[in-house]
Length: 356
Image 1 (cartoon, rainbow, N blue to C red):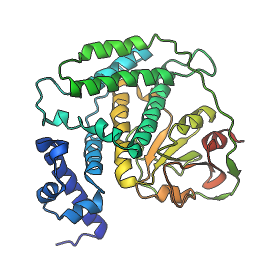
Image 2: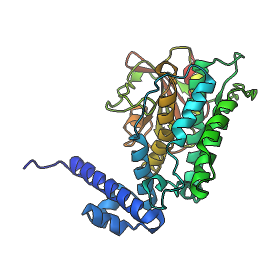
Image 3: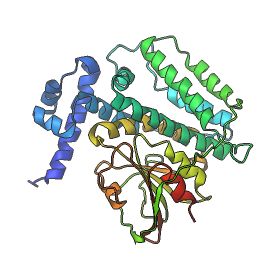
């Protein structure tokens, strides 16, 4: 019998806990589920559960994130060619996941009905959630811009994306609170109609003065990371700009994209001071929208921005961030295996992308 390493044992136990928690939440609901019962289902101790997850809420986020990231993605038979078509396809992918009026309280489709109350209950989750939704709007807006470039040189479609996500999130919450009220076809038609709005969306960069250095230090990030946008292996060692962003600074990703020259390799590394609880939330919130984006847009229109989760802090450490937290904003310009520029503080993404 082959003896498992400590890391392999921990990964196996984590998978057992997730599977047991999914069953417990589905059968008893999030509110009535107990950590002790989850441990019994997994045939592990209570301590083994807590060694992987700091609490029931973190476990709930992780279960929902795992489901969202492994949701089947059906490539479009006819990829959207217009913003109207794309918004309709995004909405169609979104509403197919909503619970039906005939679904019982403990049906798998209602597993996420307690998500928003849990987020709203704590400032520690509200702020990251707001920034994660901003990042979702940026990704969706960038994809729409690939189909229909804004009419003005400084124009954008991010506010249009925010409006569409507002409609979709509202539909999800009403489906949970008032089963039968939401008509999926009305939601789809509403999102399609949003394409005709002119929200006078412009790109404005506030003046900032981040610390900028030219260290010429080696860049050797760890391998094995996966891009959350396309679901494929990422290569953060490539030439380009790498931004390490805490969960309170994710909106800076737009500064990175707007300031970078066409064709630049752009990567966002998400970090937090509470990775065991908040990175599962990040994975969940982004996966909900990214999976819809993949189903709606042709591959050529996917946003030119990679998003990586730094669970261990190894990517942040390679960027010189020893103790990342939710306010971290560090951006590197990488060339031929070396960091030729490092910016830190508010405006770092803009500075690293724009700096000659």
